Amino acid sequence: MEIKFRDFRKHKVIEVAGDVDLYNVSELKQAIFDLVENTDTESIIIDMKDTSYLDSSGIGALVAGQKKIKLKGGKFALLNIKDEVLNVLKLATLDQFFTIYENEQSVIS
Image 1: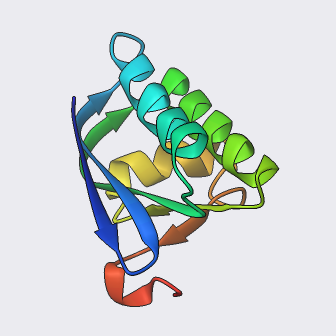
Image 2: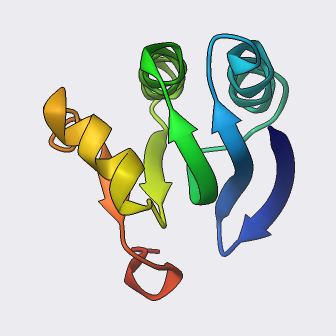
């Protein structure tokens, strides 16, 4: 898994490439928590256009990240999810839990 950071409008974007699984999920969780705890970030978007696989530990990291930033009054969303990964979220009915944007043009400012 590879993680990159960028800004998009007022959002901090974490780009996640590769598989998100038990072996590397701590990197993603740490990246999200660092942004929440060590910056004045009010909105985090996880860009998953290059995420090829997400297991239950990855889902857990996303849920934890959303809860963490919402405790500070912030927003959390997912972006550019491939069908294979989206299907995993749908099976767990988490497509209703997360704000999900199909592309950057659909992101609300």
